[in-house]
Image (cartoon, rainbow, N blue to C red; front, side, top):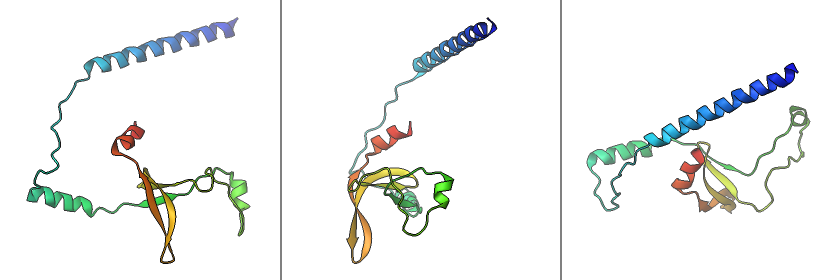
Length: 136
């Protein structure tokens, strides 16, 4: 009987917490304000100050990496790997690679060979809007 009372008390506390969260979210929605943004002008001239700031940003180094695929294996299996071992990845052959900048997906591409060096040809660039949606 005690277990049933504990379960009911737990469910009551859970229901109260859910109600409290719903009220909080409703209050947050009521306080949201619409903000008008200025339209971007593509042909607007860049001032010297803006050019200096842009030059500073353009010199910031970033890490770009290409991801062929991923795999989750146990430490036991990892320690058993040796030359010639094959690790199965979560992608099929011919599927596009992910292009990441500082760990953020920015594009998809395919491997190419140019002058005996590997490269990547971008096939799909992720829009800024889509990248922002993935942050939420």
